[in-house]
Length: 257
Image 1 (cartoon, rainbow, N blue to C red):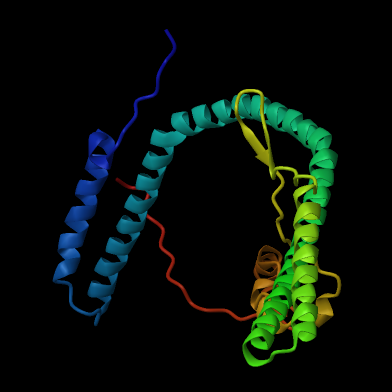
Image 2: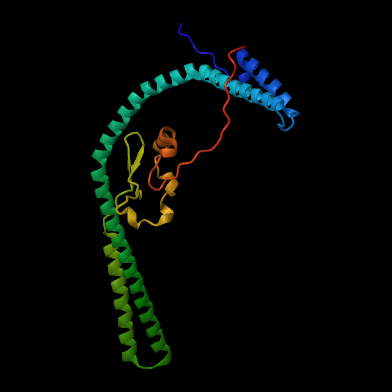
């Protein structure tokens, strides 16, 4: 039977962690009523508190790392084993993309062409309907307002021509081929469609407005500059960079326990 690591869900479940937390609690109690440092004795006491608290923090971090190490190692191993198969499936899926893409793009072209033709037919239909309505209105007006039979006959002819043109358009539109579907239905019912995704690429960084750029301080290689600061200290020099020092407290614990 394989060794299964103990899974902790709270620091209180580890005896050694509980001991460290107890030490921290005791130190914090002493600090609660500690006045501001005014003499060597108080400075010595607070210095020791600080050193011990930093030590407890370090020990807690060591506990945490030790407690989670088996889980992290197991996670890494499982990720590696799964990723082999995940990447294989993704490569095979990309092969499907290469096979499907030309067909789907051609279907998209045909569909867009059909949609443009339908839109043009709609515009023409609207125009012919407007002409038919105008011709009918004129014929009705002539019939109401005049006794000119010839004018009425001519107007009726205009109405007939307008209706004939509209009917002809409808016949032509009904015979138009149906636009391809936007997706392909798989053998087991899956759906695959072509989705348009807009992206960007930088062609001239000098022309990009400032609001789309990172702040200057985020463009520097911070790790490299920290190395220069630590190694060269007061002699460090990089154009556009100011190196400076600041005071921080540093403590070391006694070897005695």
